[in-house]
Length: 144
Length: 434
Image (cartoon, rainbow over all chains, first blue to last red; front, side, top):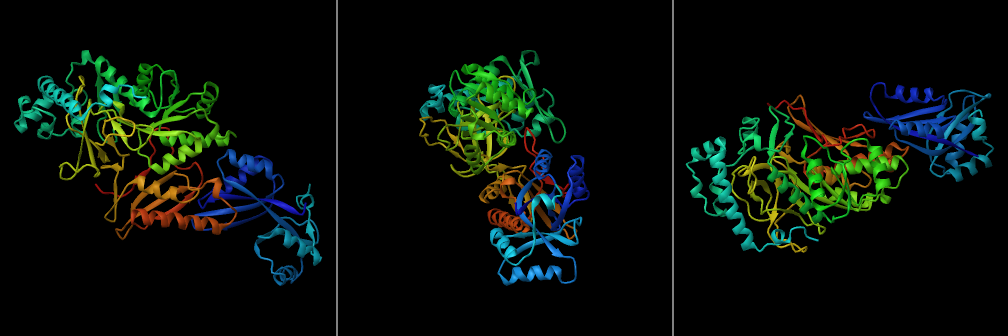
């Protein structure tokens, strides 16, 4: 699998709400591998890569959260100055639209592991591979 | 099918004669039996002999809800409490609750009008009916119950609550009819989805929904979501509970059983009648009740009326769906806003469920603001902030255009707004107006 399952969760921008979501995941022994928040003054979307997205989705739903899945790509970039820029330039040169990106929490190698979200995921994967930018498989990225 | 063809399809002349005869009798009766009414009549210098036909009804005084509260508990009754078979109480938001009583004959009347209503909605003898209105002091549950009993339907007195059990009752007993509030049936549909049951497979074919105002857009949503025919029932405990008026399957207004509940539509400010088809406050006079007959009771519900014979053959006049309440209408920056208008706007926006709440507040600079809280639904949630912002903008535009007022839309998490099993708490007014 070249893609990774990302969960996006709707949360109101109120005190303690993020703690509740994270607490819920923790209680169910679900580990957060990567996360980012897109927010407005009223609400936000918490985007996470989890080691067990299926269970998380079920648990969240039971607790009246709305969560939706989307495929993202885990890309390894060199953890040196200009490393990320190199990968982004390849995408820009090939007209690939990057919707958003964020980093993995832990580092498993000398490289930095990033989450990329594309509107045209197949094309993006093709371009990345053609340019020898390493895509990390789901199993590896999630440490399974 | 028509339950009581003789009165439901009576000629206009026969109906008028019946109404006149009954009004004369009722006025005479309350003048003798109810000191509170006698005092009201005496104050206006009216005696029963002044009432010679139904047209004289405009000479009679109105009965506002306050009269019931001021005469709490039994002051407005025309029957001795010994002859009252059943008492119902509706919760009061301010002061005393409203108490109504029924003699044995009143209960038979209630059963009759509720049976007419069930048949009018498309029910018939032998149907199984799930009654998911509250039983007890609230008139909803027992009213439909008495009607179904009279009709000869099989009753599941499910009452409210225990949503999962409601769904199981439906799956196991396959009732053809369900009676509850319109917001509760949509709540049940959501719960079914959560349980992995397609709401379209529900056994309910006929819905008898009432006790809160709801729009045609909401009716369409119920029809579609549950693959059923949702009909509107009207009632209020002061008159008798559910069964005052009911939509037939053509759903072009609610037939009011005017042989027993005489309707007038008036301008709530001038108290003058409005022309046929124009919205105004519904005023009802009970023509045959014993325990607590009411003369020109101000319902505070805004409706219009038509006297045209319906396609179904009934001559019973038809009320429009409730367009609002004279008392839950909120005035924001000088504009009259009814929650049903907001509901209509929300349903125009693709994907927005009609679960919402209005919060009116006054800002420091003394300007009123209206916040519309809308629950986010799975159907339109994506990982894109942009998509949610677009949705918000669309909702805002729809409401601004419908109501003619700039509002603030706030998206909130699912199932966070009060969604009661009875009436929904749609409006919260935080302004200190009194």
